[in-house]
Length: 376
Image (cartoon, rainbow, N blue to C red; front, side):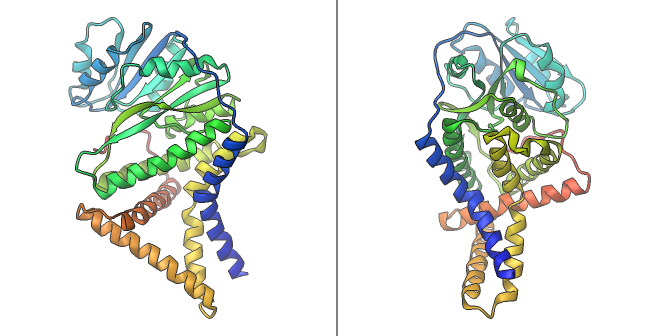
């Protein structure tokens, strides 16, 4: 019985991180369902959530204003910043720029719930304050909405390394390449249920009110996918974003995200119902299995000690111990701001799953994370 449980736990982890991507690849190659793209000109509102972004907000607004698109507005949602973010944004006299200055820091979801229902544009593009757009970003994003089945559009990312490629920066970049692979093939087969909050767009009519303690960049596309529309990924749109550079900043960010993801799973568990089809499967594997992968990892390691009389389970324990020790050494290298591919891959993998475990315990303790602070 223990042998079966160990093999099941290991199979769960392998399928989550290797089997699922392989299935996505096979499905997208054998049954591709590409969407129509073309030049269209719907009205657009760019929604920029900002909290203490005085270092970036001026350049961000200037970056959007030079977009090669004729009909767009910019909403700067200031989430109770304690610095000069609101003052800087208010100095723009361009009629396309509107500042909504909230006095209290409540989080992105609260601001979206207040503002998006008042927007009359057909398309809403959500963006962070730090990412840099090429001049044709809006035009490329909206071209995907020519297909009436497309309800949300995600973009590709290019991370700007600030400190010469630390272990965290390299790990983040490698993790994004993995996520990118999943999103390319998920969209080509039918749909994704996730986007990067750095920049993504939805049809405004598909927006639904968001609980304050869940990640809006998960729930917005999730609601779109579960409504029967497609969440696609366009790799031709490449947005530059700033990497996190240290273990502490990455750990804090990943723990906050994990806590909100766990909250989302318990809030939106109804979306695991098979009646939602492929989107429900994506939600199950990409979120549920990923968030709770630390559970079978823990039990596979624990149960292994009870079967050491068998040679193959001795080998299995050796492999598990080796992997975790490599991750530990990768952590030591990260603290010293050194990097080595052999060690930062297991280190970053363990960091992600450790953050998910802490996120679950945070949820059980009643901790919620409706607000955010930048980790740069």
